[in-house]
Image (cartoon, rainbow, N blue to C red; front, side):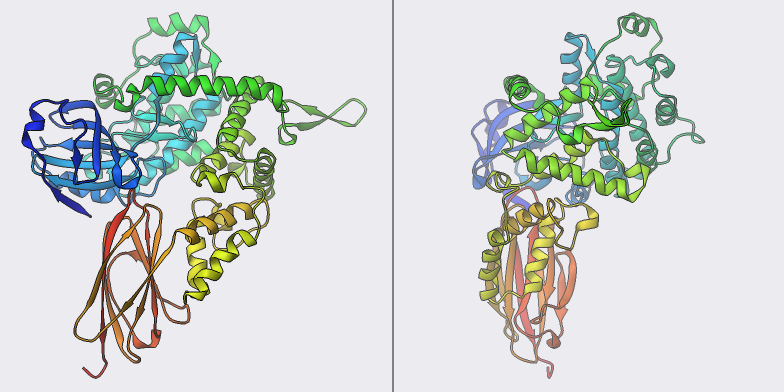
Length: 575
């Protein structure tokens, strides 16, 4: 883990607001303090990374921890978790007056605030919305649990809807080791939050799920999610996710009116059993980033205006929205989806326009995905069209705007020129292929990774190729006997560095590479053969049979640009 040492004037901590404008370690400029100071959670700041074009980041100052080491150990693990629905965790800064933790800034709003907005309009979350939410959040909890971590603080305040892609993001966990708490408690807290969304009651869900009018199978899964009975509850997030995938998507997938009778009935009932952590969540900070109300209101208004414009300018439904059904004369007629689903799709197409993605190509992409899933004949893999479109849109939003705008019109020539430039510099074609495969990993389904797919998926493969090959930088280094050659190189977030290491013929090469935990390395021989499999930065010795030059590929999956150090030394066999 990279720990940056710096200094800062102790006087700024005398006034909690006087730190605004201060630049930490010549990189992070504090803009606004959002919460704290808290004895355990410290203070949360909105800041910008001046080395990354004033990119917004969140900084938490932790100067009251009784012991920093447990926090450091958890941070090391968090940096390796690859879920894009957790804020990416960056540097730890060791400063004179405390420990500072850097992570992604997430633009969006908490589900608690969205619930309040809907309550003012007498609206609640529908069963379809909540089912989709559960399916999207459980894999995040599963990623934490697989690393022996428990979130420990799931609540509506800590579940956010990200503005850029509409996906839920999980915030602010206590992150206790798995031996101190069981993962099923995270699952139960998520279920309590889900029922609260269904009822519109933030902390007083009903004591009987029967009054929600859910499908019996849906209700049965929710009851298992909520129970504390070790013989009935799901043992982990993965098993709960599997059960939810078996459920049919309810017809209502957008906001619905709150039943008039339900409001009074639920209010008069005894509170549903709530865990202590759930109760503490209501008293803690109400989501520090939720203070950006002008931004949130502006985004909501923009979405509404976009939906109205889309109503008149766009066809109400695409060919993918029409389900054939037999008519009286034996012909087929088109059946429109429910109004709630149509509204959800109009919002999706509004976001599509905001991202400057071609609608015709995108519709074909989702149609092709749906057909490929149906061809597999496996019910758990089938998806509602809109749900599948939401998942694709989240992936596409990760691309730079200039590439997104070309989707549907990209061709081989758009990336082949970049490939030829690398080949002329001595990069082996297999190394180029590895660069493209790594870039396409977050864009394409698992079944298509490692190969060039057909259209419309080919557009995403080319987009990944352009982004990957355009970002890579090449450095040459000579390995000499006895005296190691050392270099420190910057590598941008999401970028790659390729180091060509030359060595005398017949000599082995000792490589030592050090950097952040979110960096990965891979070493290729002169003929493109893999000499060191992809994995964390480390020390390795490459046999002379690998040839020269060695091609060392280092990628940065971290939140910000960082340095890595590479040392190389030739080891003659006769010594």
